[in-house]
Image 1 (cartoon, rainbow, N blue to C red):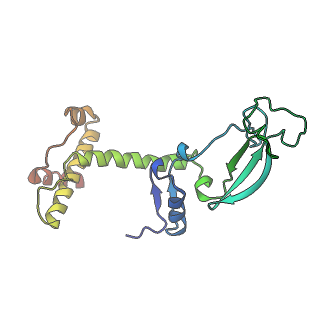
Image 2: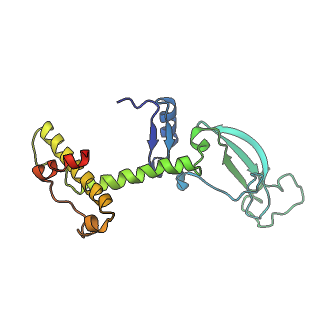
Image 3: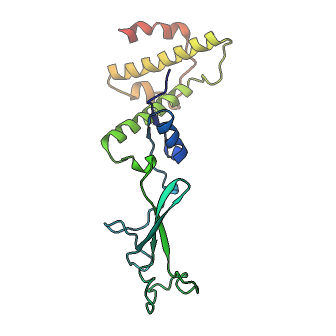
Length: 210
């Protein structure tokens, strides 16, 4: 199965620029990954986008530069060019004896794919919700103990996995038909399915097909 033009859905643990670029440039796909706040600094800003220094003053732009494939805007202390001003918060870099006094901040400009994604739009949230649905199903499938096979051979393992999937689908179908979850899920306190019996589960195939 080709993965060209795929949609890569993952949690914020995969919020890495290299992954975004690989999906976009190699597979011509799109990423649905929330931002990891540990990878992003969000200083206080004005509506104009200028960050606010520790003294509560709007900082001034002080040029752009490229670093590790990203473009960053530098902001400097608004009192930097003054010859007689005094820092209201007595910042440690104000009286350090250097020419460029005061604090500095850097803001990464959204010129790459990772920062260009609108994570507040409805389509992003709907697609990302599919990941949680898949993980819930994977959790249920894991409870069937298929990670430790009790059969030998590829075909036998394939058949047992198929039976396990049929059992889970039958469980979901029964919950929909009877319009309840408690009878089929909460009745087992540990939410652990027994090892599926082949003959019992095979009898459910006509029900699923119908």
